Image (cartoon, rainbow, N blue to C red):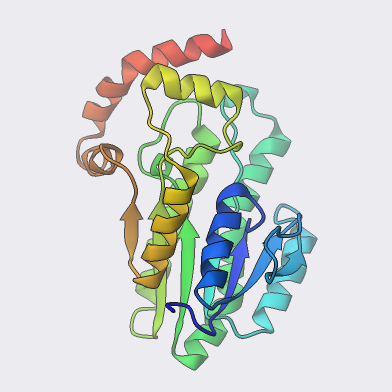
Length: 251
């Protein structure tokens, strides 16, 4: 089994995708601890209750994580605001950045010294295609995931040669309750594909097992990631008509 006797922590492990990932890791021999406000539904998984958006709670969690030896940290938890940037509340903005970016950075900071000292370990950050193709009306979400992508790359370079791997995985939209009704309307207007959560969870676990570096799920989205990096003005023009249609959802 690919994860025999590995001690793995998963933020957001009680969510729809998290539950599937936890189940696969347990089936492959891992000792899994879920870091989430909700208790995991899978028997056999440990649980550390936490609110990643609470600064004091995050520091308590980081202290607990730093005091244990972990083989893998999976930063999966995320939140999303969809709508005009000026309509997002300051509270929502702070929470998005705290959960999607600050918490993964702080937890990686907590576990990395122990991994480095043992000469092995893996930090896995689950981003989004939206972190590379920055869509209108997803400004805070796209920005936080873009930051997570940059952090993953920087940390990978910093830990090179230490035996600690950093994996960044960017799924596209997934068919879960994470998507609000308006996000579902957005997907219909823009003809955005929504992937099966079982398939996405399986691809994530496979990428972790293979200790891959950067993984982008879905075509043509993975192609547009590269195109946007080289020719963003082309992508601006390609998205403009759909952006105008989507803006009517908020008129």
